[in-house]
Image (cartoon, rainbow, N blue to C red; front, top):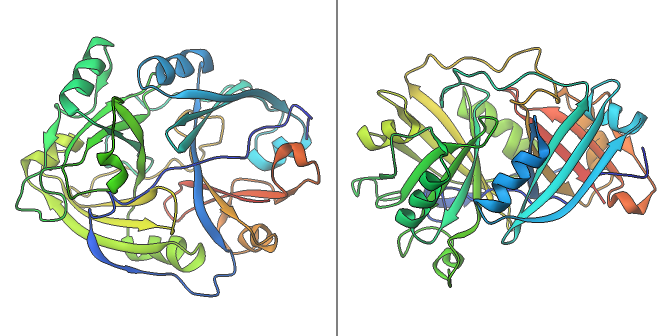
Length: 345
């Protein structure tokens, strides 16, 4: 790998729609989980113009730049599965969480489909916690963001786990889905109630659309070691307008590790017309997201690479160069096509 290296110190996203959003006692994965994943350290996606995307996240949403680098070489090609790749990568922080934006200088990929919907299987979003929804929505409107939701929605009190949470979906410059979310007292991680003067506080979770919750649990809980923190069924006009999917009824599952943000499954019970993840999608396409997990077990990377999961990488990548801040890494797809990158240090 080129000594320009790329950041593998990622801090990703998840928390179930907050610590209390699904409300059940955590169900942990196997105690002797062989993969040994311990936390989500970042969420990343591919963009067409890194400078524009960095400007959006720092200028509008309050992120700060941790690192910007350019990378190429055999190991990067092996890890991403993209031959002849050269990429610019920016690592950004909001509070304790990290995201990673990647622009492929070569070869360029395809844009996010313009007709993407929230129930398509390639859907993934970041949930950014705000201290004041009205101020946040005014800020987004002033910066002319594209709506994905009709507008901010307050989830009904009839849903005991998510009642009175306010949320709004919108789009980043390349069409990636983002969410701002506000938690009332008593919901979500208690740290979100200690806002101070900040408007954008951190990343609560990342959410992915799944076709079969039980199948996805076998991958994320039983193989990777997440805990199932709880489940709820969300439906009604507010949920439909939040997702902008008429008649939406969802089974929502929150997963987490003991630290870090959470991962959310969105299984659409209705309507069931979401499209599958494109079989020919690659890491340089702009619809590509990846959730990066950390393991302290060096053998975990090799085990995941041989677990039967579909590979994005051409195989595990190993490096003794400490400037890369990892020992091994591999990227695989989950049962619906979402990419997971596992790194060891």
